Image (cartoon, rainbow, N blue to C red; front, side, top):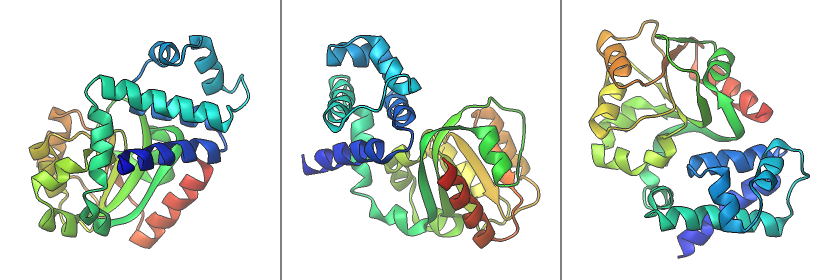
Length: 235
């Protein structure tokens, strides 16, 4: 229960501190995969109120309303079996993953894949659908692939879903795609850093599993981290 309350505080705190609270509310509603109508029904309000908050037509809700919104999203998910909630709670039991993360951010609002790729001097490896991502994780792939089992990777699925996973310290870029396929995880975007050309097998996996795949041509990891942090300050 303490971990669940910690999750509630994390989401509510992000909305309260956001410069664009309406879009941050929308981001979390989409993370929980809840239609506006269902959230409004749970709160006993009109769907237009949710729409007005998310679009900025109505001023930012106060802390009490934000708490109600967060509690409603979590309650709706629990009523459906708690899949999203349980995925997030599993993060608190898997601190190992953090030791491989070189940089990480949650965006205050959804960001289009093409916008993100352009910022990091990236290039798509094939033509795919332009979708929203909600954050990124820059991972030292050599350490992660060598030390994390498929079960460990599955436990961190909420970190991966609807977010960009950037793998650096690569030789060919094949291992991350194979590992993701073994665990059936589907990041919102996969970016490979440190290689000039995508591996044929990695590209084939990305196309078969419909995983957006790109290469970042920033020269050094330190430069990439700087670009990522500058991007996060905007979003």
